[in-house]
Length: 202
Image (cartoon, rainbow, N blue to C red; front, side, top):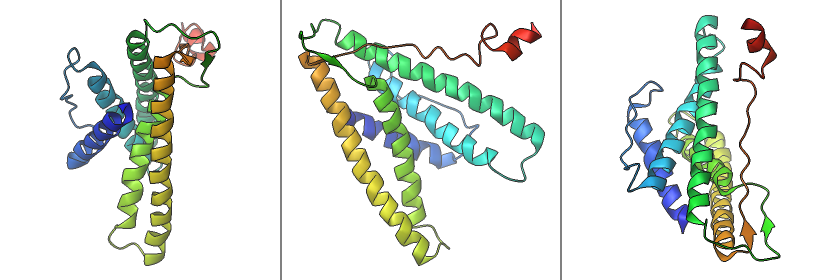
């Protein structure tokens, strides 16, 4: 199943990040962009999500320097754009994979493309990792650990359900029961023609 591969790679990414556990650490993709295209994309996607997860932790520090916070906000904005771009690259991979499939006359479209499901699966892998950390965190109370264990169990169940839904969607597309239609995100806030603040600076 596709999600077996995806979840394995996401865990690999998250474990690798936490060896150094710094948002500014060097990134290296172990998967070749040509011969291992989807693995390469999945690894990069989860790395972006993992770094951004920790950006979001840092910016919530109530003692953060305002200048540093503004710089970090810019980094989060750039990361969001990278995240969206990676989703579109992954959908392009799926479009190419299923380009020869002829949808059935009664084929339907899904509420989201496969790659947006993958996006949620990547972020869910981060939730699983960090919630598990809370269940064993030294110094945490037994009450805290027990509450986090319950949340962790729910996240594991959610991970299975979301994985199944993504695999089912891909199978339906492969069989012609569903078809893909991808809309570019058309984000406006980074575009100096569409964002009135940026346009005003020109």
